[in-house]
Length: 360
Image (cartoon, rainbow, N blue to C red; front, side):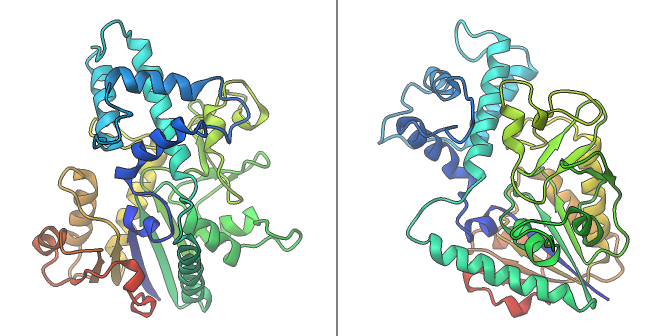
């Protein structure tokens, strides 16, 4: 059986219409101005106005259209540094304010990345998503291939399409059978169903492996029993930001409230929890065994030490290397990749131009 590893970063999701990291704060600013931030939530309790107050206190030129906004990673990193050092960024701001600011930044990030941007290209991007999903589902349908998707992305654009194709609920239209998901998909960890009190183990011999290295918008985490909830039917991360106790943000172990399992983009990071450690280990094991790596939309930035270490360890622990293709929109990342993988095929035309038949 051939094993194929599809390693995806923000550029892959961008091909399906989702914003890249350096657009997040720009979109947040636009949605604050249009009063549409957090409007998908039943009760946001003025959270958008609160976030705007924090952001304009930190960046007085936030709403100047001639100003280039920083990357959201830089903003969260600033706040994380203040929290880690028990210091303050803004005169009069308490440490508790920084924790609240951090919470709102993560909420805004998740809210922005939970859905594609409504742009003139969206129809073509959705079409591409369906083409990719059809191809990948067919790739594992005959039992001759295993596919492992190792991704830093939070969105479920590709996940949801694969669930629909490989684990549809035979009783209900447009619904997913979570037992079929548990049998056919490996998430690198045990997981709880959001529908009933059951914990699914990792399956043996699953055709599809989806390893979300930084968490996902269809996950929630319980800090007490340390289990992860995975919802194959759609995003549930918004319940982590709901301001009141609710049946959807309480665990079957009776702990409340469930929280986001997202690793927010920041240069100041602590240790990963047990679930993510398991996901990273599963990713390493799959990459070690894979016959082929296809790396799409991941620029291999120098600050992303953990991902580089994962790839290096997976490569160094093999007798022979896999066939490697790297797909990027331009040549910028080529020197970084050639340093680590001098024999890789580097494709600078972007995911849209990359032939799906090359993923085999």
